[in-house]
Image (cartoon, rainbow, N blue to C red; front, top):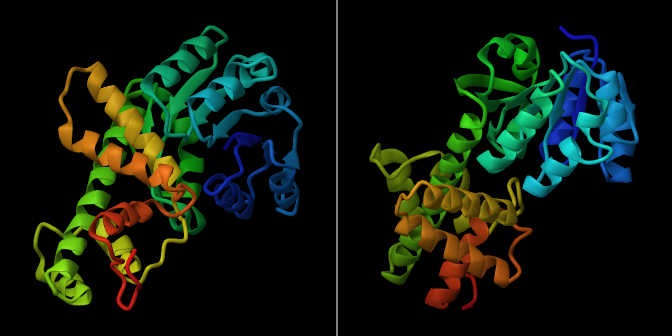
Length: 304
């Protein structure tokens, strides 16, 4: 394994990923804009803190980033105190963020001129999987570089899959999350229809869980019960899913692919944001459907 690993972005996903690397004995240097996050990182074994992405890149053999959006990714990589200013030839960077293919390719090309290999490594899973080390990494970039980052992917995740050249990982991640956004709205509408029809929500839940039909899936397994219980504490915030759905829709439009179902799901997420539910779990898009039918889905709740 490389002598030192850099990690930028100590948020909901990044901090537990760093914690797992620390537990595995990896020598780490980290950066975040949050003083509280840096203070928490200092308590981990083998973790050192730097003031800028440039300083971090100067000390690292491999750098992982886990950041909120395109603008921040561009700033961290290409800004005046960014990775590009400190990284030397031979450095490998891995962006775990969910961003546009255009942002990934811009970073890839800029770093390539300095002999730095950039991989897009977006993730499937949310905070519980980051904590347990069961993330699935979708890997795009130079296939030969995969061997250099594999030991760390195996520490932070359960599985990883190489999918193609630079930005392929993010193209797949966007379509995955676009599909997840559609499913979350469809589940809310199905539950709402049952409740309005007088069907017990728990009965419907058990039928889908036990019946082996096509309606069952990971979202149903992890979220439907919570929706019926009125539990929307975030493991993946609604505002982030809305961002991903927006990027997925933009990508489809760029390719000339009509996506009316995704467009409607994105409008529902827009409405959820307008109503102030962005910091709740993305399953809180259910609140929009509840508002439309004039009642909550959880038993015993008052009308909306």
